[in-house]
Image (cartoon, rainbow, N blue to C red; front, side, top):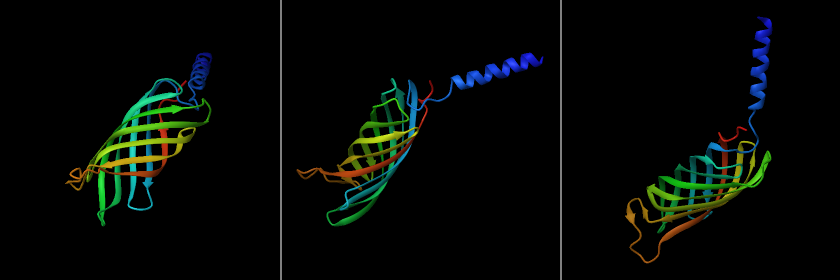
Amino acid sequence: MRKLLLAVFLFTTASAIAQEKSDFPTKGYRGSGYFDYAGNGDDFETYNIGTTHGYQINSKWFVGGGMRLNFGSLLYKNEDYSFVSATEYAAVRFDMLEKPISPYLNLRLGVTVGDIEGWYAAPEAGVRFRHFNLGIGVDCQNHAAVYGIDIKQSDENEHSELLMIRLAYDFGGRKK
């Protein structure tokens, strides 16, 4: 009986070691949660919290989509507006190295609805350290409407290019 228990223990331990998580993404489900700040130091700033989910195609490429909640302020026609909105987006990501520390490129394209409405794009470059990601990019937001006021009536579309800093945590997609 002891030999059987010892054999089961050794088999279980060896199996757990063989399934130890990798330091870089591999094939399968991958998700992340993040917080970011975006602003231009002048008339637009936003704090965002969101999540992205999708499929890790191989150790370098990820495709998926997600949603974020946006809390911020916009100076429009000399009026300061606080806003809450939501953005749905598609995402593609390229992790450059199969190492614990790796640079990455990320692109998100989507639509924002709520107090501010319009298209959204966010190219980003950053570094991944195991499950943590720190990125910097440009958060582009079109303003088709502010608080339901249609601003497309003029020939000029309002939009902002904001400097964005993002901190994210990855989960899933790391088993070998």
